[in-house]
Length: 346
Image (cartoon, rainbow, N blue to C red; front, side):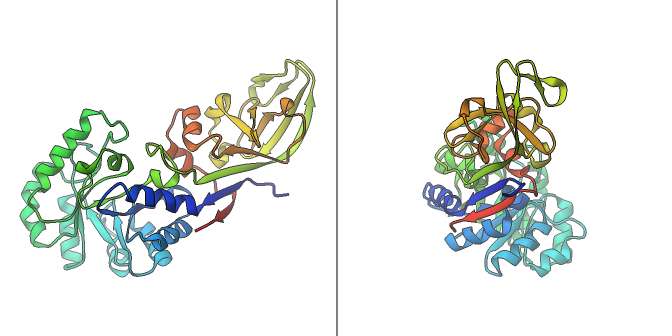
């Protein structure tokens, strides 16, 4: 039996999530595959999405665009959120990447280094992270429009909270900057798509919803993680488990140690609230999560399992995120390289 965990990625579920989101709009639905497709493997994920009909992908930096181009071939558009930084010119040109320019400096660099090469503009509608602010945009708008940008984008800060006033505030700001330009627009990520047609414009770009995470509550689970049991042991009452003696047996106890830990993205902080599953039976974590191992109380199971599941339909990425005080994105992107990856479907 393997001594490493098995991460199973259901490409059919991933494609079904894209199709379900796409059906919510009357515009093009792109796909965000940055950070190695949120940790699930850009190559396999992007190829499955391209076969399903995705024509436009978004990545964070040009280096990701290089890998993506090798996976999906010459036809799909690849947009780069970080824009055009010094040193990016050859990658952008050679791999036909489309930078989303974030500043006047990037605009000048791009137009001087690659005149005629496609580009988009990222506008800051209030998040204060990336993009041209309204005054900066007003100063260069005529120059930009004369150079025929292919897309104008911005990013919602609070789209996972439908009633947050920031959503309407940012929508108004984005419209103020872009109405009448005649340039295609893209504003909505997963959460923005769920806010309704006012946010859809000409293209939407879901990310986390493709991979089974909130706020897309209708998403199919895409990832399961099964961990091998590498040792079991018997504890008498009063014996302890793990660093700091944080688990003390109050009865005759059976402990299984599985191969995984915070070195594989199973955050130490989630231990007290997390269980592992033997089929439908929950088995609580016993003591602290270590770098490479987790101890699990299997007393009530009545037998020694060969595998225990920590992630799946019973306990989702968002459940684990709640247990760790974080978000599903971090759970996915932290999944370690040591797991054996099995792709099904697609």
